[in-house]
Length: 338
Image 1 (cartoon, rainbow, N blue to C red):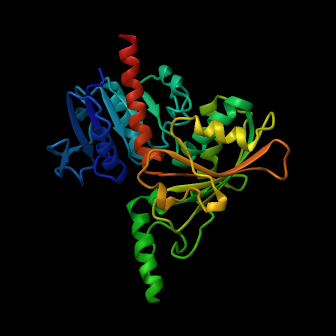
Image 2: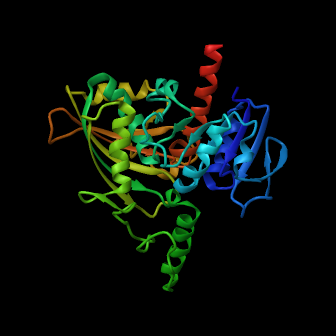
Image 3: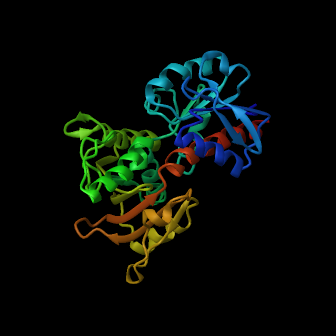
């Protein structure tokens, strides 16, 4: 089982990374197919030394598929995932369509791998900003239980897809040339600017992106008492999301203890030497699957508070890598059961 694969949304930015990671990580398969919209159907793509023709995403495409890794818009996922599950496939879904659905585990393998055992055909991958945040939270939460998180995100334009990247590139050139540019993805210019809104207004002055971070964090840790106060900001950076995090724990965690906990956690790299101007930055984190943490310091305003800076590649760990890691977990669960 899990030897006959489908990559859904195979021609998109994240889908292309999923294809790359399946090869890099030597994911075993007997057969594989690549599915996308009618617009992309017929496109020829190279995978693992062979050429494949992209097929149309439709119900019959899931015949004889054991495992599908999907990166599509929410509305597409809501339509096709039931098709796939009905045909007997397990779907690792990166959209927001199923994350908060009862009976659908929301999984970050470094944080809650055991949740995968409860799937009923769908395993959801969290929002990219949530993913790197909970990886950073995990060792502190295990050691001293996190009660509260205040987080501000600095999110790259790659999080808004190809059009977001185009807006950054073309908008910057237009601004430098002092010519007009009509933005596709953003309500305001992103060149030489920051936009303190990602997503529409959701509730009590918070955006949909911000509330994802609240609800998804509570679901992943299975603890609705964890309080999360997020502010999500789009910045003129091409790739990698950054987060300024302040956490409050049940007991005081010193800087030394926090650093040791982070350094002992797989998937985290500590880059923290302020005197040498060493700390995580997007330009040095892009292309990695790890979460980078630095600027670790005690919170001057709270006796049990700890502040730090967190950077991760939103297209890799925030999306494609996490999905492939979930697929690896599914495969490992079958091997253990066998």
